[in-house]
Length: 113
Image (cartoon, rainbow, N blue to C red; front, side, top):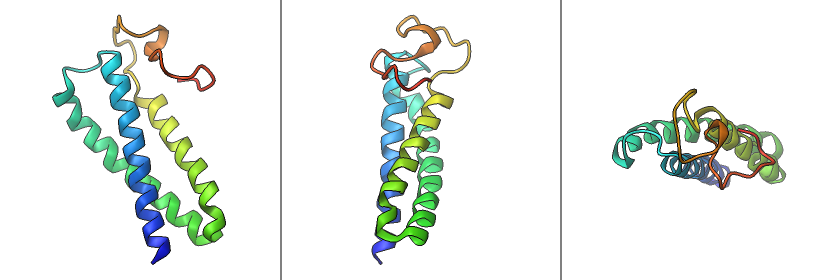
């Protein structure tokens, strides 16, 4: 029962964090048509990211138990970073509001996109 709650919270939490960051990057860089049109794409990103993260949490917690929570959190952070690196801006999309490579100004320089 505890593992199922951890998998659900970890998977959905990862999906929410990933979609919030991606949606903010799209909004700040003026990517897409508007927020309503972008929400359809973000819904698919949420579903995919939540499913993959839920599977990740299930595998880690099944193998490592409660100690695996730190490993699962690190893996979720890598999943969110991967989604941001992949989808933050389409290649060649002209964005006058963001810097080179369409990287939002608030994104940390330590993590390349």
